[in-house]
Image 1 (cartoon, rainbow, N blue to C red):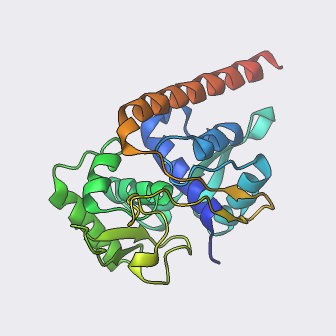
Image 2 (image 1 turned 120 degrees about the vertical axis):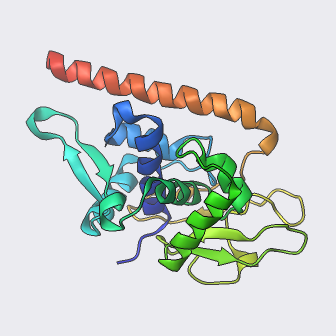
Image 3 (image 1 turned 45 degrees about the vertical axis):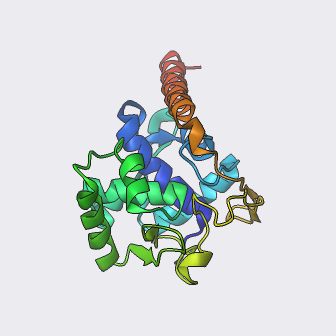
Length: 235
């Protein structure tokens, strides 16, 4: 059973939040939707509804990549990923796969900067060694560098987006060839909702983006605490 871009976004978000906001992991459907749709550390930015995420979770559960972690006794259902168990991945491999799932094909240098908040890599060589292990196991694919680029790019193969085609045609590059903005793309995900894609945000706003990400994660923590309080009060 193949998985598409919505499942990839859900899976990547679960892995990310396990590392960045462990206090609220496993995630409720509402918190997972916020994680999937956040505007920072995502390429493309999407607007998924609950129905699309539920359908994606159903497919991932049948594949044994996610499972329901709680929800009995009137509590809100929560979900967790099972990649550590099913694919036997370590923390470094999970971090790299998560960033590839959330931001598309990237160079080792880009991955080093973006995955460090999930797992501390000592140097670029550690990232490259992790990519080599993932490539050998068929979870990651290396694309030849484009003209003018200094590094090869890598893409995850858990989903179907990057399993065919030349590296120069792979979607999700953070550096367009002509320097211009790529036009928005729309795809039909599982669950019946449109997956709205938009161009990536410029790297010039990285500092602001990091602050926004932190605020979004804090909002998720507060929402989760409010849900727990409502459950305890019987609301």
